[in-house]
Amino acid sequence: MAQIQDLPEHNGRRRSARIKAWLHVSGERFCIEITDYSRHRLEVGQVRAIRPDQRVTVELSSGTRLPVVVEWVEGSSASLCFVGPIAPGHPVMRELIEAEHKPRR
Image 1: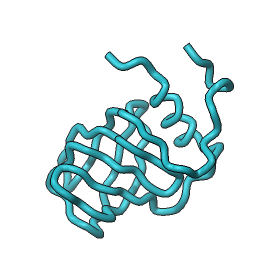
Image 2: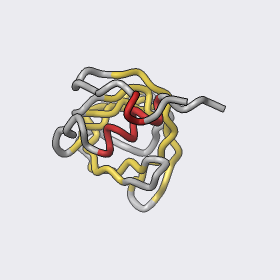
Image 3: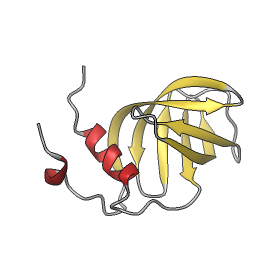
């Protein structure tokens, strides 16, 4: 298994992934899958009950919560923008990179 120091740095480009997470919307919590991410946004699948310009929260498996704004919704997919860009060395980016490299069950 790769150690955190061995994982490639994220340079702001989009990365494909399959990371399970939770979406908090109006007091409800839904399981979602992060399918793509960058320092500026997350693209997710399995979403429901959201609309463009809505503020929602994504919760990663560690419990870290990220405030985001819904950019667009198409079917069960959506693009969620971070309130501000995430720095490459920020723990959230490291967590996404680490989750991307975990073996899938």
